[in-house]
Image (cartoon, rainbow over all chains, first blue to last red):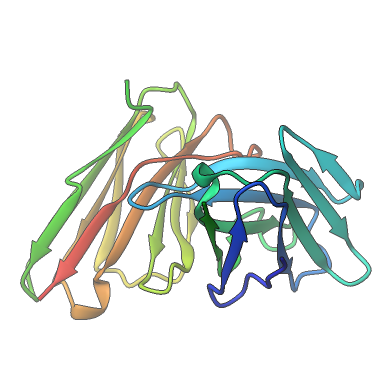
Length: 113
Length: 113
């Protein structure tokens, strides 16, 4: 399944399936992007990052894809597990914006057993 | 051992009161942050400090005053609390200002009644 992470939509996914979480960013000068995961009652937790000179980066069960042409970032989670249920945020940074990390609106992922 | 710890975890107070939230990190990081998360889960930076020096001061009412007695601590004092201040406040730290894989605390849920 897919979702756009701007207004806290919810993505329901069956356990074992792959998840795709999308993020549209606005600043074409952004040079660095991060995905964070926030579980209920906890603070955001770093998942994976990517620099603007790359278009793909892989971690353990996660892949981030960056399309600078359309200013789009996605997080793919392979073989989604119940522990992946959380709110996922993309964040961007640009030197022009003072090198502050600016967070997107978040996407809630619910994993169905 | 909690890397970034905030106290209190919950804070319920009346309008007009003054309150403080404390944050401590034991990671040896140079940079600390305060973020505000509203009811729609939107995360916005408020302040950042690097080695006790204020680096980022977003458009935050001057009722909010951060204080960093040393690089391991960043406290947030709020005067004359208003209903709109109700939110979850997150403290975070990073090794330095140019590293963005922040470590977040578990948040302080402030409710102003």
